[in-house]
Image (cartoon, rainbow, N blue to C red; front, top):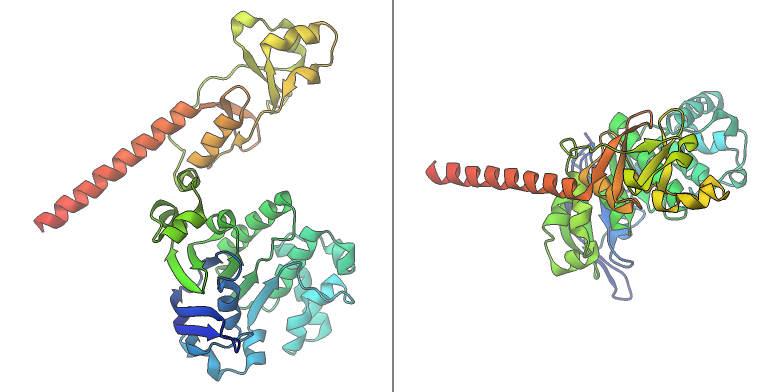
Length: 382
């Protein structure tokens, strides 16, 4: 058990700045909690109090029921994993020795610590061939993975992550977020993750703590509740006007109807006829989508121009186990207005229409309303 509890926490700096005010918060053991908010709202300060890198002015923080003010700071930090932006790696040490740092500080031999480091590298998706490289020889994404591996090397029950993915490009960031979800499902650490990005918070968090300016906690709830029922005007503004669209990511798309979709291979483009419809999806020999072709533009191909000049990118794909947000995004991002659903191997399963996605949303809401009404009736007659 590694639950974390903030009780009446305040932090005021000597210049009078209130970084955190009246923070009361309980983080359940094994949960992934995200602290989110604008710059200067106290989210990072609050997280850094957990390993005593910052001490509160007032209040008590406990980890597994123990007041951390009674624990030696160095001892406390050796038992808490910590990941920061750009990995925070030691530039003069090879990757394997960076990962082995904490186990060696805890008394393991260099050989044992390195062997354990290689196993952790496997777990976070790092090729062992990188073990002998220095941090400067790695990409940004690789450096972040090394930082996560180092934090996990001593198998700490608590993992603190301070905006760890903010310095990498969006594609790598999405990969790292997916990796964190996979790791957490396997390891069940108590994770506190700081970000200023509400989308990242929604993607990762079991619960989200939204901090406002002046260090006041505005809301602490599961992400779907933060989106659907913002507790304050500040939360509503911070989440954004498209919070309803984001909320679709918590709704199942299993029952969305797949429509027939017209597919052709590259050799069939020349035989397209407008009377068969305006759009066709070009697929390869394995049935994987390569893009849409507008039949009205096929004359350009017949005139001798390259096939690629008439093939448009296909928009996002709807993959197995996706949600309503991804289903709707696939439909509206497609140039044809038809989203492409694929199977686990990437082959086309059928098409998605935005109207069908919205119909499914309406059906889910109707079922939820019926369930709420039934609960209200049951409570009223009890």
